[in-house]
Image (cartoon, rainbow, N blue to C red; front, side, top):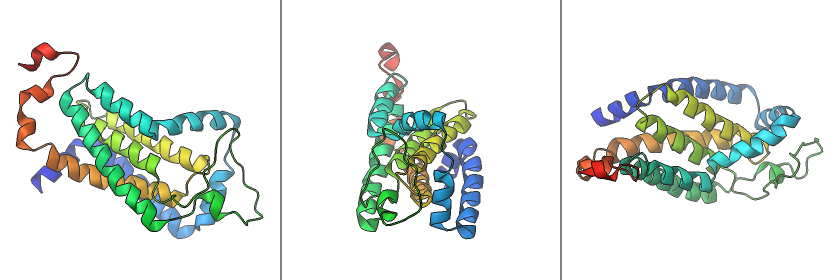
Length: 222
């Protein structure tokens, strides 16, 4: 419990605004239906957003996850291992959940609807039953949490949270997911990553100072 508390303290800049926002989302879910929220967001499209959000959504992709792990090798091997293992774990949990819930994506859910739906031009809108939880959101929130955890300047956590939220919103903006999907993805990533970091980063073998070396400063490993 002490290790878990210590980890959450290192993530305060991320967790405090996230929890406040999560409360607002839950209130919105009580007041409005799934369909109401979807069509509200679907009505907020604008030309710059049609360019920005397809770009932003890639920050939650598998490619971005791999790049993040590789770049962190130049920061420290410990940081890269923490990022890689966290991403592997949250993904390993999320994929079976997608198959378990088998929830339709918006394009399938509204297949027979007469309500006009706006789709971002030149974006492939997925039409399957793997909507819940959102994988891009899981990936983005996992990366944001690990970055907050390893970054000495904790105020950067606000920036990492903002980037993760933009990825989550992009999934709704592009009609790939519902609010429920991205909310569940963010919760899954947050809870699992915190527990994992609390346990894994305190393993005895990681206390070896060589883990603090990196590809950019090998000579300091000794």
